[in-house]
Image (tube, rainbow, N blue to C red):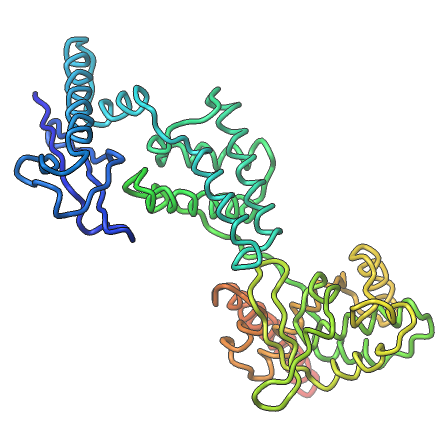
Length: 407
């Protein structure tokens, strides 16, 4: 058994500055491992036959010495393992090499990603997104500390087994549900994609490790229930105000946080001459363009001179989310709606009862809601299909009863 060590230039991974990474490949018993050397050079400076930089280029000697040193180190590790008599393969050599030289830790790369998000705040990322990634980083650091007894581990050592152990950890120790775990994995997967771009690793282990999403029940109001809420004569001001804001959300699809910050600057006239709400979502920072329907405009008109917000640059007198949801529960009881009504239900209702069920294309609904993926909007379509199926089951039951009575 012998080891074969070669260096090659990855020409297909040329960076913006015109340089390509040099990789080392070592093979033992037909099993090979590829690792980035961390050296980037222009393609015309690499001698493929000699597997070195061309000698007359400035700095070539220093970089060639680094390559020779790495080759010697790999050979030494191989010789030591062979002399020890223990079983080993190319992966064993790789792990010894990574632990013996200065490598980038996974938390180091995660911090790099966080800095990148901060630099892009309000330019594709929101502070809320940053906080979510910070939480994911915290969970990962806790796992490495408590389970592996280390402060960090080489980014190259992340594999299927690590991801599986991390998945078990967040579900068992923190009692996280599948969809919460999915979010942690989503963030970590993107960090590993960054590591690929930086040439710290060659492949993302998430290509083999899959994490699914559980379908969650999304409560919605039917158009009949929404109409009942609209028509109810409410004499208590606090409930009347909350009812108006909820209905406004049902006809715009805006979330609680976006309605809370809604100001006159968000109202604009489009190329069609009609009035639109144009706002960047608090959650994703994605821009939403929402046509103002008559019922939404009616509510905005109602609060144009409302005393409690006359000196503020906001359009609606929004309370805290906790108070809003508490008052919505009262409204549900008053209107005989046997559902746990919250502000977020308004957004679900807009997506299903108000738009999709009235023939608005799912692509249009997705744009209005500011979803980053059509898959997210398709969840609402499934909710609607389920509701239609349940309604048809009720109809079938009634028809069967009628047939039995007339038989």
